Amino acid sequence: MKIVFMGTPDFSVDILQKLIDNFNVNLVVTQPDKKVGRKREIRFSPIKELAIENNLKVFQPVKIKDDYQTILNEKPDLIVTAAYGQFIPEEVLNYPKYGSINVHASLLPKFRGGSPIHRAITTGEEYTGVTIMYMVRKMDAGDILSQIKVKIEENDTCASMHDKLSKVGAKLIISTILDLVNGKITPLSQDESKVTYAYNITRDEEKINWNLTSQEIHNHIRGFDSWPGTFTKLNNLIIKIYPGEIINCRSGTPGEIINIDKDGILVRTSDGGYLLKEIQIQGKKRIKISDFINGNKVFYSGDIFS
Image (tube, rainbow, N blue to C red; front, side, top):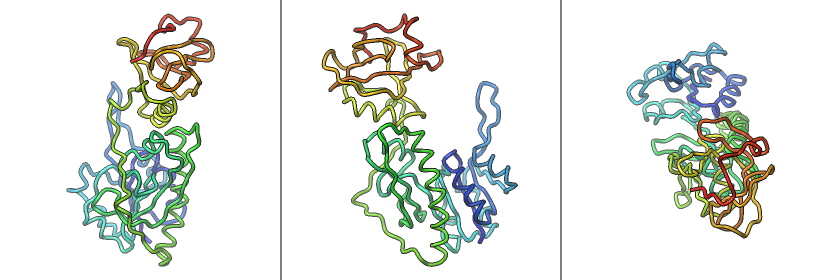
C-alpha cells in the first residue's frame, strides 16, 4: 500500500515514524522551509528532518491548492495528515483508494481547529484525546474512524499533553489503518450540535486576567505553557509567567502582590491566591523565585500586576 504523509510540526513526528516502521511511505509533504533569527538561517520542519533521515522524497508546495500534481503522481492508496498546516484541495482528498485521514488532537466534535490542546486545558476539561477521521473540505468535520480518551492531570501543561497525544496518535494510526483496509471500521458522523472550536490563539489571550479564579488562571497558564506562554505587566514591564500553585488567600485585590519570599510571589486572584514560582522578566532569563529573591529590586508587596 502506497501512503503519502502530510505534516509539519513536532506533533507529527511520532506519527510519521510509526508509519515508516509499519508501511510504505512514498512521499512526505510538509510546509516550505522558514528563515529564522537575525541571520535569517533556513530551518527545516521537524517532519522534513525525519523524512531526510529516512531517505524519503519530500514535497513542499507554497500553496497546495495550486500545486498538488506531485502527490497524485505517486498514486497513493491512502493519505495520512497530522497538523499539516494548509487546506488540502478535494482533488487530492478524494484521490486515494482508502481516502484521506487525519490525526487530530481532540475528542471531536469538541475543539475543531488549530489549538485543541491549549483549549482543552484552558477550559478545564477533565479529558482530551485523539481522533482519526476522514478528511473533508470543511475543517475537522469528517466522519470519525477511531478515537481514544486521555486524562488531563492537574499539573499537565500544553507541552506535556502535546507529547502524550502525539504518542497516542502514533499508536492509534497503525491500528486504524489496518482496520480500515480490512473493512473493520464503520465511520461515525460527527454530531454537529456538539461542535466547539479551538480558534488560533491571539496575543491578547496570552495576558493573565487576575480577576479570574485561581483555578481558571492555573488552567490558563498551563494551557499556554510552553507555547505561546502567558504574561502579566507591572507598569510597562512585561513578566512571563510559568505554572505555579493555587494558594488560599483572603486579603488584597486581584493582581496585588500579597507576599514575596523564597517560596514564590503570592498574587491575589478573584477567589484566592496564585503562587508564582518561576518568572522571566523582560530582557532577562527564566529564573526561580528562590534564586531571584535576594537581589529583588523589581517587585514589592502591594504592587499590582495588570
